[in-house]
Length: 446
Image (cartoon, rainbow, N blue to C red; front, side, top):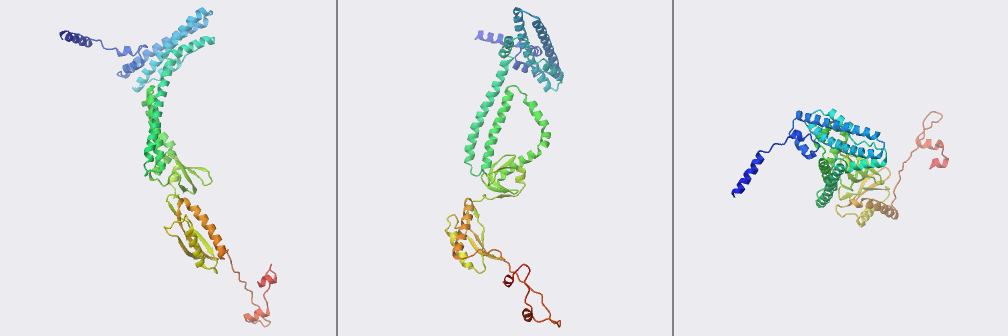
């Protein structure tokens, strides 16, 4: 026990007397890993980061000079024995420059977060970025490229970053598919939700998970999401003004999903456009016309107009009108209508069918026939009864009158030689009416 106490005392004492880490020195060494460099930069002030950035620019400038010198020597070399070592040296220098550029970027990002001016630094780093292939033959060029691909700060780094991004996004994509199927099963059992709302919930759940996955994947590869959010927030006003019509359609689409004036498959008439509802997005409503044409209507033109839902209820009334002649038996005609509606299998018993003498027209006595049926059988009942009534009326001798008009001809009165007007009968006897122009005498008599 005594030896254990002594050992712990010495160990704790060594920790107490350990020298603190020099963060500024650590932040200016190319050998420092990226994650440790970010930790070292976090507590630094703006002034300290400006000094570190200047140091890294100096390191980059020195390395760029070494690369330029080596390139000049490589171009002046004539034999392969000299060119080989110089090319290898150039490859190592370029890989070292890539490492410096990577660490320099971390420093500049930290300085930007503290509102530092990094414009000149960024321009110089951009001018020194990339790898310059100065090889005169394909073999040497391939050697340079292969060295960069195998380097930890070159191709390997980018391969790891791309792999991380795709891996994280793939996991969230799988999660979105599983969540979408689960939510679909849950919403399918909710009978109080419309089909449009169910589709909306399924799509939005999947897209929300994929959007979160995209953000997480970008953060995994080191993308500064704070700057991205700030950029989006700064441009929100401009985007809102430019996309005001789209935002209006979006708001009206939400209203359509909440108040549900129609559902998928309903036959509707909107602003004079008729068709079956195919889908409703946050921007537009898709209709399929009765002659099979796809019509996209902006949601603001849907919610702001009168909506007629022809299949919103399960039952509909079929309004029919039949005209008979004034000389025909109206009771017999109405009896035929009652028999036909009672015998039709698609006509409902309740509500009861209404058959009445509706009006006395100019040329016909108009009878109304208003049976009730299921909405899906509306046109079947309409067409069947129209055909059956025509045949039954023909068999019963009941005519469908066409418009008629009686024409009365009046003739001018004639006077005798004395200037006295004879009575009407005498005038008809003394002066028969003249034949109208364009008619024969027989036609005029008729």
